Length: 98
Image (cartoon, rainbow, N blue to C red; front, side, top):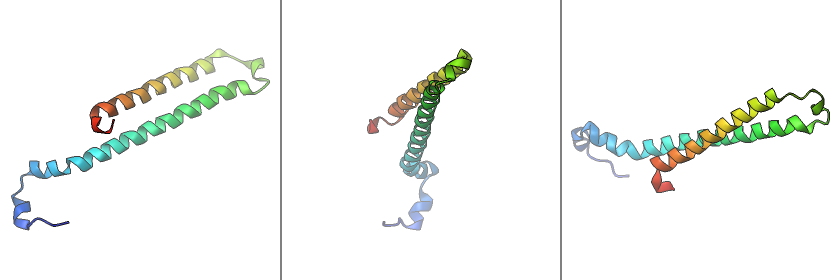
Protein backbone atom coordinates (compact mmCIF):
# COMPACT_ATOMS: atom_id res chain seq x y z
CA UNK A 1 0.00 0.00 0.00
CA UNK A 2 1.25 3.42 -0.94
CA UNK A 3 0.56 6.01 1.76
CA UNK A 4 -0.64 9.43 0.79
CA UNK A 5 1.56 12.32 1.82
CA UNK A 6 0.53 13.70 5.19
CA UNK A 7 -0.20 17.07 3.64
CA UNK A 8 -2.85 15.47 1.39
CA UNK A 9 -4.38 13.48 4.23
CA UNK A 10 -4.92 16.48 6.48
CA UNK A 11 -6.30 18.42 3.53
CA UNK A 12 -9.02 15.79 2.97
CA UNK A 13 -12.43 16.72 4.24
CA UNK A 14 -14.13 14.63 6.89
CA UNK A 15 -16.73 13.65 4.29
CA UNK A 16 -14.02 12.35 1.95
CA UNK A 17 -12.41 10.34 4.75
CA UNK A 18 -15.84 8.94 5.72
CA UNK A 19 -16.42 8.06 2.06
CA UNK A 20 -13.25 5.99 1.94
CA UNK A 21 -14.47 4.04 5.00
CA UNK A 22 -17.95 3.34 3.58
CA UNK A 23 -16.99 0.01 2.00
CA UNK A 24 -15.47 -1.55 5.12
CA UNK A 25 -18.37 -0.29 7.25
CA UNK A 26 -20.92 -1.74 4.84
CA UNK A 27 -19.16 -5.13 4.85
CA UNK A 28 -19.08 -5.13 8.67
CA UNK A 29 -22.78 -4.32 8.90
CA UNK A 30 -23.65 -6.97 6.32
CA UNK A 31 -21.58 -9.58 8.16
CA UNK A 32 -23.28 -8.65 11.43
CA UNK A 33 -26.74 -9.03 9.86
CA UNK A 34 -25.77 -12.37 8.30
CA UNK A 35 -24.55 -13.60 11.69
CA UNK A 36 -27.82 -12.56 13.33
CA UNK A 37 -29.74 -14.31 10.56
CA UNK A 38 -27.70 -17.49 11.06
CA UNK A 39 -28.43 -17.34 14.79
CA UNK A 40 -32.15 -17.05 13.97
CA UNK A 41 -31.93 -20.06 11.65
CA UNK A 42 -30.25 -22.02 14.44
CA UNK A 43 -32.96 -21.01 16.90
CA UNK A 44 -35.65 -22.02 14.38
CA UNK A 45 -34.16 -25.47 13.95
CA UNK A 46 -33.84 -25.89 17.71
CA UNK A 47 -37.47 -24.94 18.22
CA UNK A 48 -38.58 -27.38 15.51
CA UNK A 49 -36.68 -30.10 17.35
CA UNK A 50 -38.35 -29.16 20.63
CA UNK A 51 -41.77 -29.40 18.98
CA UNK A 52 -40.98 -32.82 17.56
CA UNK A 53 -39.65 -33.96 20.95
CA UNK A 54 -42.99 -33.06 22.51
CA UNK A 55 -44.46 -35.99 20.58
CA UNK A 56 -41.47 -38.33 20.64
CA UNK A 57 -42.09 -39.53 24.17
CA UNK A 58 -44.52 -42.45 24.01
CA UNK A 59 -46.21 -41.24 27.21
CA UNK A 60 -46.51 -37.63 26.04
CA UNK A 61 -50.15 -38.06 25.07
CA UNK A 62 -51.19 -38.84 28.67
CA UNK A 63 -50.66 -35.30 29.96
CA UNK A 64 -50.77 -33.45 26.66
CA UNK A 65 -52.09 -29.88 26.59
CA UNK A 66 -52.20 -27.61 23.59
CA UNK A 67 -51.02 -24.43 25.29
CA UNK A 68 -47.26 -25.28 25.28
CA UNK A 69 -47.52 -26.47 21.69
CA UNK A 70 -49.31 -23.30 20.60
CA UNK A 71 -46.73 -21.13 22.35
CA UNK A 72 -43.89 -22.91 20.54
CA UNK A 73 -45.71 -22.69 17.20
CA UNK A 74 -46.32 -18.96 17.73
CA UNK A 75 -42.65 -18.41 18.53
CA UNK A 76 -41.64 -20.49 15.51
CA UNK A 77 -43.87 -18.45 13.20
CA UNK A 78 -42.41 -15.20 14.57
CA UNK A 79 -38.82 -16.42 14.12
CA UNK A 80 -39.50 -17.65 10.59
CA UNK A 81 -41.08 -14.31 9.66
CA UNK A 82 -38.14 -12.45 11.17
CA UNK A 83 -35.63 -14.62 9.26
CA UNK A 84 -37.47 -13.85 6.00
CA UNK A 85 -37.33 -10.16 6.89
CA UNK A 86 -33.58 -10.40 7.40
CA UNK A 87 -33.23 -11.99 3.97
CA UNK A 88 -35.40 -9.29 2.36
CA UNK A 89 -33.57 -6.42 4.08
CA UNK A 90 -30.15 -7.83 3.20
CA UNK A 91 -31.20 -8.18 -0.44
CA UNK A 92 -32.42 -4.57 -0.50
CA UNK A 93 -29.45 -3.06 1.33
CA UNK A 94 -26.79 -5.12 -0.48
CA UNK A 95 -28.20 -5.88 -3.96
CA UNK A 96 -24.74 -6.47 -5.42
CA UNK A 97 -24.41 -9.66 -3.38
CA UNK A 98 -27.76 -11.07 -4.54
